[in-house]
Structures are given as C-alpha cells and as structure tokens.
Length: 482
Image (cartoon, rainbow, N blue to C red; front, side, top):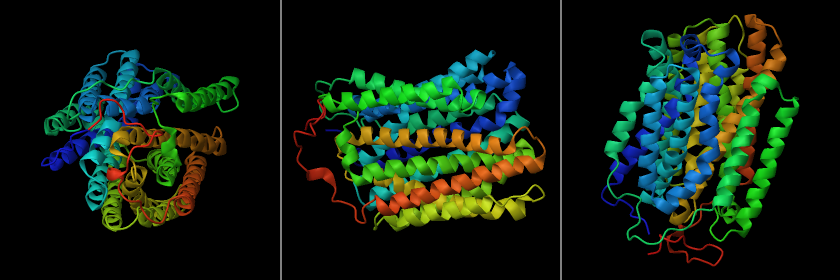
C-alpha cells in the first residue's frame, strides 16, 4: 500500500497545485514568444513550429508510461524526478544558442512533464479519498491548471516585450523549486518495500510509439497538409501500433494500462469528454490570440492582458464546479459547463474585423471561460471515480493523455479548417473569417462533449472502492501489497 500523507494533505495539495501550474504555464507561455525566438536564434519558418511540437511529442507520447511508472515506483519519486528534469531542461532552453538546443530542451521538458503530471494527479487522488474532500482538492488543482494556461499568455507577452524571450523558459525554475520544497517526505511511497512489479516493456513501446506517431502526424500537417502521402501514412502506422498495444495489454499479466478500466462509464466517458473539451479549449486560446494580434493589431503584452478576463472566468468556473460537485455527481456541472462553453465559442464566432475588445471579445471570453472552468474540475473527479488507489497513476496518465491528444489533434484539425477558409489572403477580413470558422468548430466540439456527459456518464457516482476485494482480473501490483 501507499502512504496517504495523513496530517500533511495541505502540503501535498500545495505541491501538486504548483507543479500543475508550471506545466500549464509552459504549454502557453512559449507561443507568444515564438517570433522573438525565431529572430534571436535564426529558426527557419518551418523549423520554428518544433519549439512547440518537440514538447507535445514527448509529453503526449510518454504519459501512459509515466502513469504506470508512478504506480510501480512511487508517486512522490516520479513527481520529484519529473520536476527536476523539467527544471533542468528549462534552464538549458533559456541558455540555448542554437535552434537544435532549444528544441532538444523542449523535448526534455516534455519528458519531465510526462513523468510528473500523472504522478501529481495520482498523488492527489490517493491523498484525498473519494468524497467532498477530493472534489475540493481537484477543484484547486483544476483552477491552477486553468490559471497557468491562461496566465501563460500574459506572462509570455510581458516577458518577451519587456525582458527577453529567454525568460519564458527561465521563469519555470523558481516555480519548480517551490513545488519541490513543498512536497512532504514519504507521500505516495510504498509503506513497506517489496519486489517491484515489472514494467510492460512491449506495451510501453507500442503505446509510446503509437501516441508519438499520432501526435507527429498531426503536427506536421502545418507543413505538408492533410492530403500528403506522409501525412496519411503516419497516422495509419500510429493506429497499427495502438491496435498492437491493445492486443498486448489483453495478454500481459502486468499491463501498462489495464483495459478493464475502460469498462467503467466514468473513466471512459470522462476521457472522451476531456478529449473533446481540450480540443475546443485549445482552439479558443489559439484563435482568440491570433484575432487579437492579427486582426485587432494588439501587441504581445496587450494580448496577454486581454486574457485576464478569460483567466478570471476559468477560476470562477472551477470554484463554482467544486461547490456543485462536492455533494453531487460530477455530471451536474459537466453538462451545463460544456453547453455554456459551446455557447461562448458560438458567440466568439461572430467576431468581425472592425470590432473591438470590449464589443467582440470580452463577453464571449467570460462565457466561454466560465463554461470551461465548470468542466475542468469535475472531469478530473469523474475520471478517477471508482478507481482503486493502486491504479490511480494509470487512470491519471490516461486522463492526461486524452487531454493532450485532444488539444493537439483538435487544434491541428481546426487550424487546417481555418487556413482552408482563409486561403492565401492576409488581410484582416479574410483572417477574421478563418478564425471565426475555427471558433465555431470549437463550439461544436464542446456541444459533443455535453452529449457525452448526458449519454455516457452515470447519474450517480459509485461507492468508493476502498473495501472492494481484488479479483483475478484485477491483480494487485507487486510492491503495493498491504
């Protein structure tokens, strides 16, 4: 069994919250700095995208392995190791002198985050048992996730305009140091040492290769287009590897991901829902940021400041969702939240080239962010509902993978859709037309997420699994026996 950090849950929550904040911050803080990075290091237009994609590939491809590893070797150990790698690579990236050095550092950041992110969420769910306490803890974690993503745009703009692009990497170092200092000793570690469960090497290779190829195939569409032979072949190879992963997991005595988890309507529904919601959320950040800069003509710092209402709405939504779901099913907040986000993105789709921030951006920002916040906290609670503590890492890695893949795949598809509408035109009216189409499509994705919440998620949550006996189909992992 794992220690649950009794007497220290506040420190666990603080450490996990700070860790999640820095991972979310890093997802968005670099985007605004890309033009400055290009000029400083001499990136070609085609290679510049790998500053983002290098992180996405390693992070998305290794999340399942990170989730399984933290179940085997201890959540605290993996969280500390991942944070250390993430911080070291942030330093390397901030000091980079050549394009390849920055891309390698971003890939290293993704590696560290893939180890630490599922470990952080698993540590949270094993520290706080199912019930109002866990819902409140997940609400704080979700608020940090939302605030980090939104404030990253502001921080990226301010740091790039008034300091240097290097600080979008170096700013991670003090935050990582705080997270490591807050983490209490012994949390999430085996109470008694014992033989470790073995790592499913074949499953890890197939999952990492399949997810990595899928992400790679999607992110390269910005250069080759969806109809290119290489673009078609790469996802096909990814599907083949993932099919092999499913077969390998069905036969493995110690699978990387026990597929029986997906028989739970909570787990399956929450992962499908977060896939769709992440695609819509990433689209909102991407297209609104472009609209503010390319159509309304705002600078980097002003664009970041324009996202402050979005941040406030996200935090308000997560606080409200936490209160609603503390005593009720996560479904209670997920359905109205997804509907509200869909309405907000539909409102965003009415943006015009002659509009202003106050008339075209502020209102839909508040509606979309409030709805998104209502989704973020409950979906994490839903994805871990009924999951035994020994599988918390696997469930957390699966949820993180679904969110990362949803954002990556969804954004690539919607960006392609918008680019097709815009064509080669560069005037504000044509660009606005493409961005509006992308935002409308994001609204459709949130509407589909609402349908999943209504039709797949149960109306009532099950009893906590603490006393449920282990069956032959659900073996205890070695090293976690009580």
